Image 1 (tube, rainbow, N blue to C red):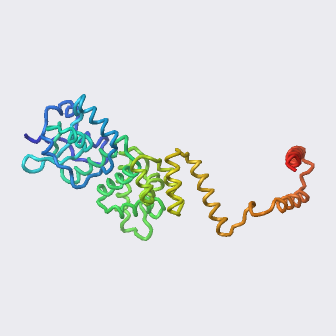
Image 2 (image 1 turned 90 degrees about the vertical axis):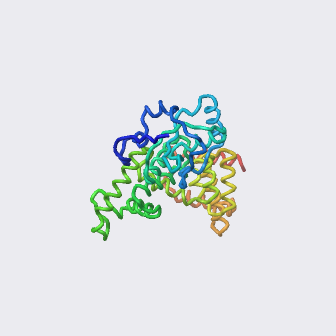
Image 3 (image 1 turned 180 degrees about the vertical axis):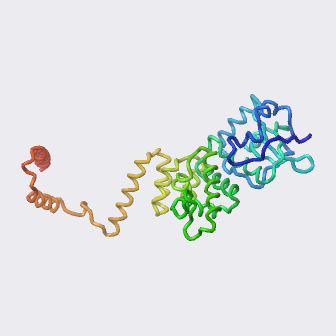
Length: 323
């Protein structure tokens, strides 16, 4: 089969539509006319997608059985009439499980960086993306675009977030000589987030990067989509492994709201304080507490306040009924 290469400018992160740089409506409509054997397609060594929802994969298989593969896979040519998958891994896996012999493809001559860029962005455009996949995917894309290791990307983002680097004035503390490089990096970061349209980089640093530091059991449920990331971050405040895992189990089984989780955490923290010798009203006798209240009331200067008089009267009646 002859490889057809799309004309036009090379991929750029500032493009309005990344995939449209390589795939047009005509490609999608005519995709069924260009088939290759499924066995001729190899998965890339670096795959952006790690978790696949079994239920949704089954739904896709049923759809393919009924309607076929409506959107062609994007592949790039290798040697000996073989190809490497660039985008469409879920369709590829579904086709493999259905034992399809051929699949529709759009073939594009892409270098390693272009192929990875498209794979990452196609992955980030999915609707069923979980928070961990999304966070890691954005981080991977920034790493590719900036040509930096992920740790250095994180460091750069934290510098921007903490104000060490001021992108608006192109100034970095004690590193004036490199301010142009830093400004360019900040511009690339901004373009990536503008392109994705999911969140801004400030929100990413504040709310998403911390997710990658969560305990393993919380990372697992986030990848499975069993819990919202806001709840996971809250549960992570519990440092005791046993207590944290117990709360996590209850949060999922009972469908606890964020406020209910916070209330549970407050009780746990309170119990910890009490166990360390902290004092609280429950350690005092009712008599001593009443004595303290009586002492405080004698010092009050608001007995002539009509509203407070009514409240005091109501409270006294309740106490008298209990005695």
